[in-house]
Image (cartoon, rainbow, N blue to C red; front, side):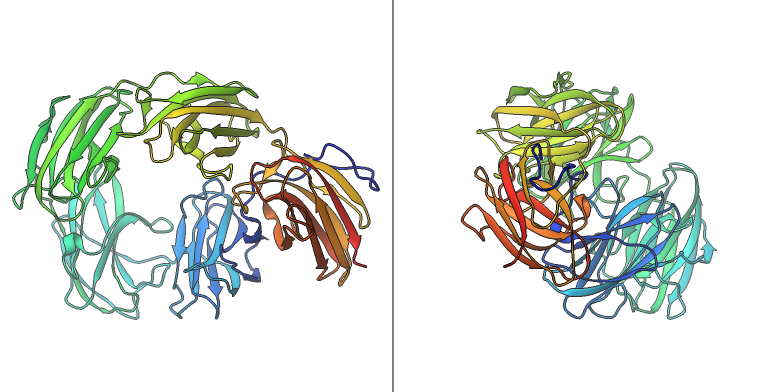
Length: 598
């Protein structure tokens, strides 16, 4: 936090905005029609693209240095890509990603290499709209023959396909299969208005060679698009498509809470909602009352799935029960009957044991006051996230736009933080494991999306940690703006927990201050950063806050803890020098000198 003053400049304004991506990965904003050159580094490079709903784009990444890989992320979620592509151009190392946004927003394009290698690339963004695809109508009980060839339409990744239209009632089940002696068939069913969105896909049903199959349950009444394609982009040949009535499912057997049920999957076992071999059990449960469901087997890798009465999948688990066993905590959102399917991951058969137990609802979360350190302890009696995972819940009220910092520290376990809305079933909006940079403590920076109450979950990484901890919530105040400095000046400032953090820095997420300055092309400057209480790192580049793009940096150029960086401006213009630390939790006073090289 810059709480002091410039010796030769009259005013300081604090630095920019919310937590940023890794400094060397930010390429800044890009627009439709732009073509930019860049280098991936080892972590890739991010570009921000502002799109309106329905404003489709084609993104192409070409490189002769690396095997390129493209992905695009939503504005508020960097954990799961909305779309990806490796070799969409079909020209070796080049990628092409086509994207059709369902809502307006700022999206992040990530350009990287498939193996994290460094190399040069060219990235272009052009307007694109999905072509109108002709669909052939088909009914349940119907069959169709088709052919994939050079005249067939293409998917966004370049795959040839043929499309069929099937009308279904809500909850209606269909058995869709594609067979071919010429190519490895790929099946998908979903919506195609305006861009195709798959609801279910299959390549090799139960390892059935070149054939594919989907047992599909319509979540709502309406028309659905079925696409038959090949697993390989260039494959051509004939195929046969059939839409059949699935084999009736055996009635679900009621479970007795607290009593272990033994069963066996055999070649004669019926299929379940997912169309795979499964024993089905009925659970009648009330809204908000959690149940622990455990499935264990010495014969196969156990897999659990929970559905509502209409066959809509609500929860699944593979390995949370340890080893090859499955376990999950299921909390229904409304009263009713639910179906538990006990099955194997893959096509294995064998004996199993199923246990369903009622679990005490989690206690009301504790109030988490602002700017106070709260002590707590994880025990075997706390609320459960899974069969072994335990957590303590805390609640706080916040307003839209607030910048909050939550820290969780413990000497007994590897701390993990999650924050989500207090309304409805808990779903994490943000999470952190090692934000403090010491491998065990967490720090989560959260910008509040809406006025309301929010819940923080304090838990351990892996779920089995127990012991004492400290949790703290602070309001970091409005987002600061970057300061200004003149060449030849000295800045005295301070890093504090109220400053911004650079996500994924050298060691966790260190605090930083930014300063703007102007330089002439080929001007040679020296940056000296002295900090008695932390290991100083100085960076110079362009852009502020999350758009900062580092050009050069130094850690120990002056001594083991102080920095000195010589830099030559590549052009006339405005630049940013960043003051930060090697350690993520470091704070303290510093002096920054910016002077011409002698």
